[in-house]
Amino acid sequence: MSKRFKAAVIGGSGYGGAELIRRLLLHPHVELVRVVSVDFIGEPLATVHPNLEGQTELKFEEMPAGDAAKGMDVVLLGLPHKVSAHKMPELMATGARVVDLSGDFRLRDAAVYKRYYGAEHPCPDKLTGEFVYGLPELNREAIKKAKYVASPGCFATTIELALLPLAKKGLLEGPVEVVGITGSSGSGIAPSAGTHHPTRSVNLKTYKPLDHQHIPEIVQTLTDAGAKNLSIRFVPVSAPISRGIFATSFAHVPERVTADEIRALYTEAFAGEPFVRVPKKRLPEVVAVKGTNYAEVGVQPGDVADGRRTVACFSATDNLIKGGAGQAIQSMNLMLGLDERLTLEDPGGWP
Image 1 (cartoon, rainbow, N blue to C red):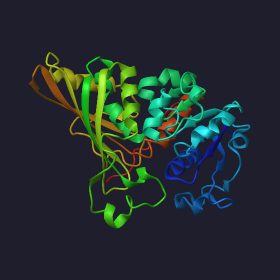
Image 2: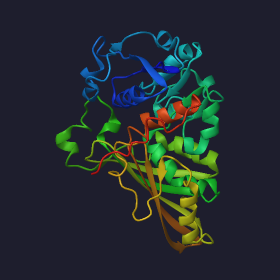
Image 3: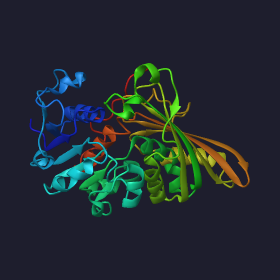
Image 4: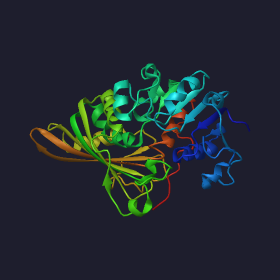
């Protein structure tokens, strides 16, 4: 039986590309037609992604982005930051829907983009009005109508979900301190000193403290959701795991908001969400969401000091799935008028 929609993946040789391909091969309504890469041209996909052995006859192809998008209903971009933006004008000219996993179209301010990504944006005119930010828990209805989606970053997704209930109620204001611990796959498929196993596996270290590129993305998104005068003081930490993010965010709410009200707020905020869980008997854990599109969120209200109550917000995701390719597929499903849960409901393994 033929499938209703055709898809191409551009930038398919990385870890994010592997997850996009895996989910698309399982999809009941979307056919993966081609996978484009600058590496491994002509090689079977399983050469790079051994989990796909015997699952597909597709091979890596090299072609201009515009040619790859011709005849496609949707294109999923797994390209690096600062590369994706250069491909976008020719992709838009084809009429295909686009889901971009890079950071090139998440920010609306070109000056902020230059500050955090270290380059002038090649098409700043497309930063406002063209792309919908692909966080379904905030922008579901807009994603359904979108032609172009900027899929959120992994740290950004994890931290935003933890703070979203407070932002939506107007309770998130002022500085928020965050420590986020991440696995090595977040650094990409190319080996580096920071991901070298002998040092990564026995180590904890920070990088880009208070200067990570997801900071303005988080501020912009939570301000859109209702936060006021927000600043994010974020310290990322490299952990000895291959995939997964665990974030602890410290917010401060008015003392009139009771601990029970805060707990109820989180339960209610995510009650209808298919991919966000608020565990009843424990706090979030990476191993509970590893290999899945689920996020876990938890909250611990603290004491009151100086008229403000400290709230510790905990969140966990798989950085490659809900923090990356899975969320992109979720947005793709919404854009195509499909059930957003398609290919994404598997619960993963334990432990």
